[in-house]
Amino acid sequence: MENSYKKPDLKSLYFDQEVEKIPSLEGKTIAITGTTSGTGFIAAKTVAEKGAKTLLLNRKSDRSKESYDLLMDTCSGADFVNVECDLQSFSSVKKASGIINHLCEDGLDVLCNNAGVMALKDQPTMDGFDIQMQTNHLSHFLLTKELFLSLKKAEEKRSEARIVNHSSISRFGAKKLEAKYFEKRGGSLGGNGSNILNKILLGMILINARWYRYSQTKLANAAFTACLHEKLQAKNSNIKALIAHPGLAITDLQSTTIKDGGMGSFMTGKMMGGGQTMEDGAIGIIKCIADPDAMSGDFYGPGSGKMDMKGPVVKFDLEELYDNRETKDLLWNKSCEAIGQDFLI
Ligand SMILES: NC(=O)c1ccc[n+]([C@@H]2O[C@H](COP(=O)([O-])OP(=O)(O)OC[C@H]3O[C@@H](n4cnc5c(N)ncnc54)[C@H](OP(=O)(O)O)[C@@H]3O)[C@@H](O)[C@H]2O)c1
View (cartoon, rainbow, N blue to C red):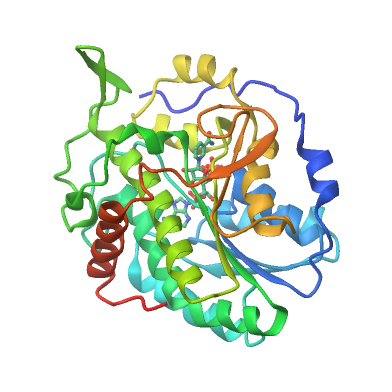
């Protein structure tokens, strides 16, 4: 089994100038999921260097410990707090939320739901859901619900708060959200085929089940943002719902998929040569977290925004694909059903 690939050695083109534009974040508390590598690591380092108290939400592992040590070594004087949070487990998410709410007596300014896995095998979590859907969306839905009062507290005290989600170009890999991916059917959602494109019929590209499950999760991230934006605006809230996608960024995401048999190392190496650095890939979520001009409902992505794999980050509007009544109702109702609770805004 192939388990690694040679990462292309690209240079960051936009990161430094974008970070310069971000104002001081002193006095703010920012929680980010999945900071052991990739865009989450870069976002955590950046906001901590700008003065934010930064909560690192990671499952327990050597990677978690090593990345925490690296952040502490490279950002002198920064205020990092490691909070154990395994997104494959609702009980772990609830426990982490209790700790974060306790740490944030003065409010939580930003929750960035960044962590993700891609095109993994068809396997259930301990809660019975698809490993990709629970990690990428359902646990973030629960986390947002559990931290909502802390976000409201920051909004009241410092005039705004933000919820940031991280999607992908893969949101377009699914034509619509399907209820079964939000149900306790992990392990019976199509199997483990690994080719990205395994069937081309009459000009219609059908992606295989691993990638289709990933697309469902990344469409769910976008639909969740559209729901939050709509509900928060209806309440005249100053909590902003924002979203980004990183294009194609050289992180550990691809390596994890290769290890799981979802991609080949040779083709991955070729493909990633057309991508960008993890720093440039992180600009979208960093703007969502900290750009003073960011508005609720903004979507940030590279190039022309929607589909490009690299380039300077621009913002665009939420899209009809998920910002429609049927999709938003399905997303909200099935996510509440999965976590076994209502999420009232
Ligand atoms: N890189 C790209 O080209 C690309 C493209 C489109 C979208 N994205 C999105 O960008 C986001 C960040 O990914 P990345 O590219 O930066 O990949 P990455 O380097 O692999 O980072 C993913 C992070 O998610 C964490 N994670 C995975 N499973 C977890 C769990 N059960 N509990 C807690 N944390 C968990 C990982 O932690 P562990 O160390 O514990 O595994 C890691 O910190 C994801 O949502 C991904 O879908 C990336």
